[in-house]
Structures are given as C-alpha cells and as structure tokens.
Image (tube, rainbow, N blue to C red; front, top):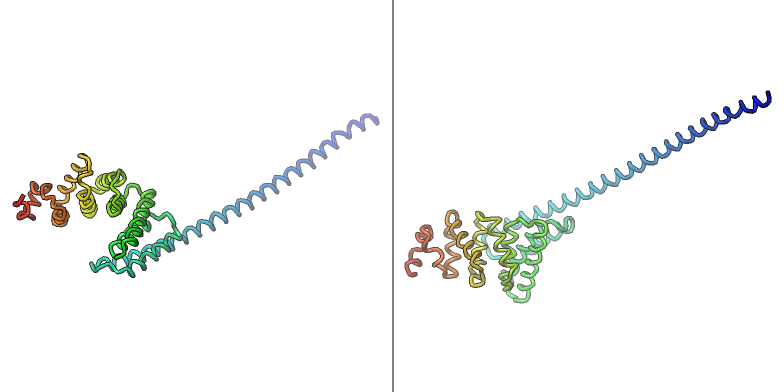
Length: 255
C-alpha cells in the first residue's frame, strides 16, 4: 500500500508543476506583451514627433518660398532695371527656405534665376561669371528632382550659353526644353535665343526642331519671336512664313 501511495503521489506533484509552469508562462507572456505594447507606443510617439517636425519644416519652407515668390513677382512685374538689393532680399528668403527643405527644386530653380539676374546687373566680370556658374549649378541640382521641367532645361541651356559652354549638355538641354514645353511661349523664346546663338554648332535635327519652334511661336507670340530672329539677322528662317512676313515685310523684302 505504501507503494501505491508513493506511486499515486507522483501525478499530483506533476500536476502541481504543470499548473505552476503554466502560470509562469502566462505571466511571462503578459510581461512580453506589455513590453511590446510599451515599445510600440514609444515608436509611434517617435514617428509622430518626426512627422510633426517634418511638417513644421516643410511649412516653414513653403512660407519662405511664398514670400520669395511675392517679392520676385512684385519687382519683376514693374519691368524696371534689376536692383541688386531686391535680388538679395528674394535670395535670402529662398536660401532660408532651403535650410528647411534642402532639395526643394522650386527654390533651387528660383535661386538660379536670381543668379542670372545678378549676372545681368553686375558690372564686374568676375562677379558675373561666378553668378552664372552658381545659376548653372542650381539648375543642375533642381533637375535631379524635376527632370521633366522644361523651364529648368531652358535655363540650363541659357546659363551654359552665357558661360560659352557650347557642348553636348547644352544641346541636350535645348532638345529637352523643346520636347517638354513645345507650346510654352517663354520656352519657345528661350530656346530660339540660345539656338540661334549656337546655330553653326547645331546638328540638322536640332536645326529642324528650332524651325518648328519658330512656326509654333507664330500662333501665339510672333512679335517676340520675330524680335529674336531680327537680333541675329536670320530672316531666312522666317520670311517664308506668312505670319512673320506680315510682321517684318520690310526686312524680308531685303532678302
């Protein structure tokens, strides 16, 4: 009987161990779950804090950029000579905007445009050269973010023309600008200005594209296009087009 009692007591001890072990496992599970919940809450807080910080930075960047745009439009709409103090004020807004959003292509493009304005206003060749180089760098940087922006390509081509960098990058910029903004009047004028300046270096494809640009420009901004052609004395490109022949009859009659 003692043997039976002895053997009968083993299951009891085992059951007690099973109960104790199960309670410990459940406790460990609860602690683990609590740990993960706390960790998840901390991670969520960090994500929300970073999102709020990023939103605040973008908001500040947009505000400064909008101030720059307002100032830029105010003094450019007056059609007055470039005032370097106005350029500096607008550029300060844009530079501060880039402190919050360093890769903002709009701000980079505007700073590039301001550098070209600074170049035109400068009477010191060394300063004008440095401003043009800065403009080219800004346009290149902005194109990394917006490779389908025709104005960026046109401005890059213009800055390279001013730097006398007549190379494949300039030709590619002209081609991209024409392809991406064929009906934009400003793009038409910029590509025509640059294209006629480097006409001897253009291949036949780019020359044909420039003639098509002149044809498209006749429907919307013929007078401005004609003035650019007149500047380069390339009446042979337009006198067979009725719209331009009407505008520049005297010049065309001399051809």
